[in-house]
Structures are given as C-alpha cells and as structure tokens.
Image: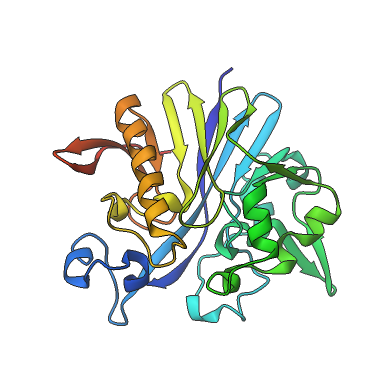
Length: 275
C-alpha cells in the first residue's frame, strides 16, 4: 500500500522554558532552543495527516478554540480551523475515518470538539477516535498534578457517541500504521509508526516534543514520571537510529522532523526531513 503523510500545523503557543527542559539549567538549554525575555518558548502544534488506502487518519488535533480565554496564559496564536486545513487538501471533516490521540492533554485533543450555540459538537463525526485505555482512565480520574491539562468537553461527547476506541497494548491500526504505548509524559501515551515509501515516520508526541529534547536527560517538567520518560525515549531513539526512521518533533517551532544518529553516548539529529 502506498501510504502518504503530511505534517499540518494547527497553531502555536508559548510555554515556559524551564518547564520544557526540567532540571536542565537555562545556560545549557538556551543554546539549543530560543526563549524571549520572559523565558517563554514558542511551541508549534503539529498533526499528521495519513492517507492509507480508504483510511484517512489524523494524529493529534491541536488545542482548538474552546478554551483560549481560560488558557490565555499560553498566548495561542496562528490558530487554524480544521475545515480550512482539510479543504485546501480536497478533504472534509466527514472524510476522516480515524483520529489517534497520542494523549489527552488539551494541546493535543482540544479540536476534537467545538461549541456552537452553547452545545458541544464533534469535529469529526464519522471517525473512530483512538486513545489508550490507561490514558482514558487518567483523563477521567486525573492526578492533581495533571488535572489542569484535561477538559471534560474535549472528549466526553465523543465517548457518549460511541466513537471512542480504547487500546490496551501495542497494535496495528491498519496495514502500515502501528500504535505503540510509551509511558512517562502521561500514562499510556501513544507513539505512531507509519510505513511509507521513503521509510518509517515516527510521530513521537511528547515522548520527544522538541529536537532539543534528544538528550535522554533533557526531560520536561510536565512529564508525570521522568524515569519512565527516560526509558520510553531511549526505546524510541534506539529503534530510530537502528532502522533509520524519521522522527517528528510535534512541538518544535524550528525543526519539524529528522533522522537520528548516535554520537558517542548521545543522540543527535542527522538528516533533516521535510514532511
């Protein structure tokens, strides 16, 4: 099967640099990623459009517009509407057969729903919405340290419409598209592997949000379990190096994707790949 992929930017926001790099001091991370005078880093929100035969798949959806006032701290800008993004690609929201969420933090799933005339609607009404069972449980019963990243109106109506598909282990979504569970940033995060004619493309989600996070110890303070994040990142990067895979950095404002290589005990970006 000839699988085609395209990386789509749904918008941008600001995040604190210290939060993005955890215990790493600014004098180190600032050489790899720019921040403004208020220590804010620009983060993009990328989604992956996959055309696999009759399946039209989206990986992550961005934050959407429902909570921009509530989340004004993040300073969202350059926000895109899905109807417009799809129209320029000769698609509509009803053409989407599957939506895969790496996890359910607002910047990855907010566009799953919209509010119109005070009612919550489903953005992709014919799509199956895939999420891990452990992430769904986490979403419903969040730890106090993570609860501010979840919003009921993002996914509850999708579940009520019986459009939610839960996975409990690594699985094949369709020929050429593989879903793998990797904990750390959030319980049951999904990493998506797509087999294309040019090789395997990895949508790493927040296992590896920025190219600047390639070093194993450079783990975001947003990660709920840094030790699990370390192992998940190592697993992902070891395979990427061994198999020559292209890794997508879903939040990077300066580098969308690349292959990866080892330099001694370190992982570094190799060839740049434009998706």
